[in-house]
Length: 268
Image (cartoon, rainbow, N blue to C red; front, side, top):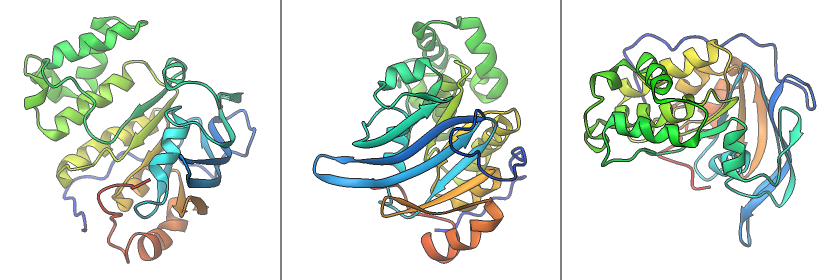
């Protein structure tokens, strides 16, 4: 499947000469020698990855390569069997997802993480129950970033379009001023024009200095906003580099001969 988008390109992410080195104070998130899996099934094998502060790392590869499993480990939803996870230099390997979220590591998962029977406004009110931010602040952040949601504040979330539901899900993470955003296939099931609109927001966040690790089925879209790209296959990082350095390998070798798509998801 090839995605063709007749829209302007996403806002460019800040330029970078390369990845932040392991242990550098500019690293927002580090994975060091991560092994992980599900019961007896081993999925990740010695994964090393660094996400710099004010940088976007695109994690790309074929279905089942281990991309979503990597995000689960980074976000505390899956415990690594070996290796370490560090946030701003602190070892958080055994920290729960809830505690990591309070530290600013926020996951925007595949699918729609909203309350479908509540209105947009009521969903935003739910975000306040985590503490630290008031309803007025959340509404200002959300409606400023996603004007469409401001027009639908009284509409039940389950009746929003898929793209609008994804915007609402993104507002949940952005309302807390996260230090690290983990984006897992935010384009899943959406029309190309909506995907482009969402990635304009991702590009804006990158330009504002947000640290982002993203998994995306549309390689071309991800590479347009990324400052660094890592290619994963069979649970290992096999190639890293600037987007222009890895694009040919990603498209021609790992994602199907330039199709720009890795399929509809990541089996691992």
